[in-house]
Image (cartoon, rainbow, N blue to C red; front, top):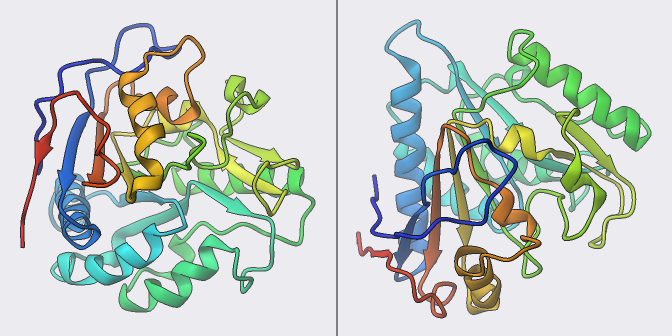
Length: 271
């Protein structure tokens, strides 16, 4: 598992005590990043399972370019695992039909899920036929049931992306949902990025996770990565507000995405 020599702290959140600094790892290419990401999933899965009959491994996924990265690298990395004991959920989802090109679930069903034997009943899926507020409430109910009635789901691992504007999940800069502290899943009907109607995990859930890894590739992300990891801004971008209270935070970047960073980071080559 990659370490880090990154020594600064990310912007403060509402947590009562500062979170440790993130572990920032930089890879020569998306392919090498993907391999390391899959190994991180495998490690977290092994640590959470506790052997035969142990607890399930709960994994939350974002969409976008992560789908193909995981589809290419994850199945072989977890070949020895038992996906029948996995719980899969989505960090955000678009209120579109499940077979729509914009559906995160639909993308994973096409590219990754056929390669993993995760039971359908252990994949938490939006009901897109509901109005967006009801869809969010329904998703929250499903999560609480999946996490055996816990008011605050605690994921073993969340894999998140970040947009060029600093958004993560469907939490956008200066949006009121950044202040949400009660709901675990919130609806958004005016997303700055289409489609407009979405549901998203809220910051309290993201910051309750045992581990969170952000993945960013390409020089189009370089400027915002620098702001998030070095900006220390008075009004932090949404991705900068993700700082697990007791969990670990990782940033997996390729070299173009990391090209503007001046903080120390670990540079990897694993091929």
